[in-house]
Length: 309
Ligand code: PEP
Ligand code: MG
Image 1 (cartoon, rainbow, N blue to C red):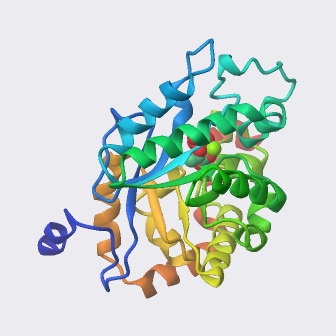
Image 2: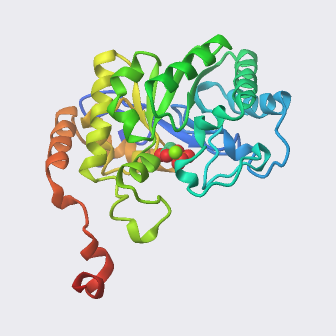
């Protein structure tokens, strides 16, 4: 066990029988730590959270170049404005139901120039740093038409690998159709949980519904991964679930091809995967999908008073 631990402490992610699973890092700026297999989610909105005026093409280019200059793979996510991440410079109207309103790629419906400028800045920064392998994806995509429109806009402006996040159940259910238009999918389990379980992702009293072990969530993940295997295209997970060392083998067993998490979670996930074979991952995935009892129920969480009501 000690030897396995030592072997697992460095190097690329893989199972005990050598199935490769790149373990990438989620970052919000060039200051965040990155593991050896690159960046699987660059949340660009964190660069501009307190801006009152829109960042120029040149400012954005400089911010992206700071990340690309390290080289390696970087999956850039286009701006994801939302309830938890308001971007004042967009000047979006207040909404009664912001989690279900104009957020993520939907901002493009009212402010198309924002995405064009961002894509141009990403492409210019990538061209200046050829040692970086830059992929670009859009958040909060719901239909294959949105995915197709995003991918063709991105490719027209010079992006070589265009993908979308899966954060809405409608998109997960149509993963096969989405993959006809994009090069890859990345599953954001934080929002996919929120929208699948109709439970605000910040709501502490609904934590049991937002638990990434929920079989309904994992069935959607599995459906996306299968569509990816059929299409021969990568399907990663970049939500918080990817950094859970107990869940990582289950995600791999479902067919997910890479995991992206905070860099500090990488060693534990690497060690966890190194201790199991791909067949064991698949068996774990089958077990979790069929076993409802693994998920804590509200009665366990709320205490006897609430349970007795
Ligand atoms: C997610 O929703 O799982 C995700 C990775 O994006 P964010 O947490 O930035 O919404
Ligand atoms: Mg999200």
